[in-house]
Length: 239
Image 1 (cartoon, rainbow, N blue to C red):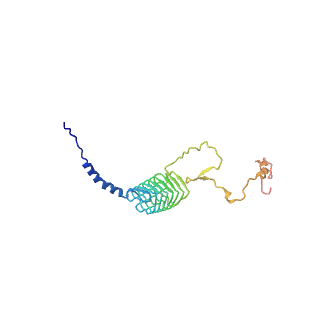
Image 2 (tube, rainbow, N blue to C red; image 1 turned 30 degrees about the horizontal axis):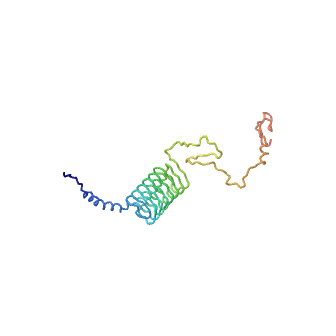
Image 3 (cartoon, helix red, strand yellow; image 1 turned 120 degrees about the vertical axis):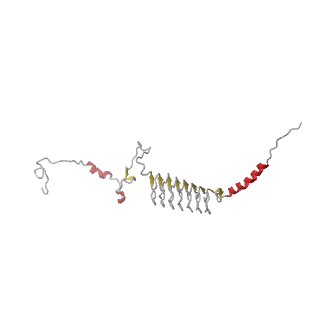
């Protein structure tokens, strides 16, 4: 008996691999699809194109960290994030245009489209939301949540904008404490009443010196009609 066996030729498969291999090698060589030197990772056209000595950076998106030179430990996800950053480090940008104009600012976090977009040299700023902190330029230590911020302002917290007309914060009602009353001005800024203490020295309690004052019993009164220096119940000058 003669038994026949079907034979599958591997030649087409091998030929296909040989054809694909050069393409894979070429793709892996592209700057936009590889981990670059100095432990940086970039993905996207012109991402980290100018990097020289910066390390531990991650750039994902068109033009992300495009002009970075020595800035390190930055993370940018989105088109043009941290595009003009050169030496700034420890920044995190998430969203198209976030921290796009940052140059030397450090320790900034911008989460949202164009968050902290105009910041150039400011550091330690936090912006959360669409266009959050977008107007900040050089200020430090700002927190902008749902607010565009103010150029060159520093050490300021801004939450919300004119679109919000009411505020609810849990954990306040029923929480008794001692302290100063909180005031609000016509611009929405919170604070406490101004004190004259800054103009005084050696401020201390009166202790027993105040006992004489507390011992007094002040009263209010009116003269009875017909009685008084004027004879008619009125007081006249010189009377």
